Image (cartoon, rainbow, N blue to C red; front, side, top):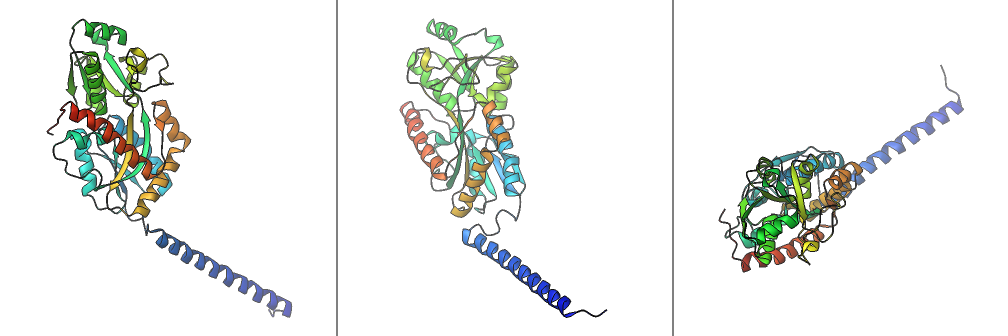
Length: 341
């Protein structure tokens, strides 16, 4: 069948449009590649799964924070995000494993408040907290809660204070020597003159098992860690460590309003990278974390466990860690608190 002149003109115009669109798509693709190259992230994060090292054992708050964050990051980055628990030595072993990894943007660590204490607590860290580590994001902060086992017979903080002033000895568990829980309660006991004995654990999971079982009468942990056990009636909440009461625990008084004004010691969680990770990748991961933290499903899970989301730039975490090192490092040094692990 022959084509008329009009048909030939239409065919020619169609071919021109098709070629133009094809060239435009090619140029867009080249432009996208150029932008990716200019951003400094290269092919990240398409090459392999991303590893989140949770620096405490399974069952504790660090593990739970990492496992809430991982699927949200996976959806944001379009790459598998795997949580790996590397616990021990108040987070040092897991953090060290992160610093030894290739600084290629595929290994990060979720750390707890012990990270800001360890430089003053440990005689020899296997890494330099400033030089060998790049801050990525301050995930959030939370009250810590001092809880009592049902077997202890302690029902209120007032009762605990009265019995302690009368000379009764109490032991309390924390997630380790130099953890913020340990230092906060040690400072409280020193201020009040209580004869309390610290019992360190390797993580929140083992700690709560012993508090629930009555092997240790008192436990101090983040609200994130203890909240499920409070809700099911397994432990008795006595007091929280932040300056204001928690919305999730409105009937639990603060230490500050219970006779110790000015007391404030929040727990916190942060995301770190190996120190030589390219800044462009650190910033890209920071942006992904900030977006994940704004995801309603993620924010509601954190809020339900008492975590106030912070986020912000890598510099926000860097400045925060510096202040934590100064505040608690001073207390560690002044009270000659040491951990040889």
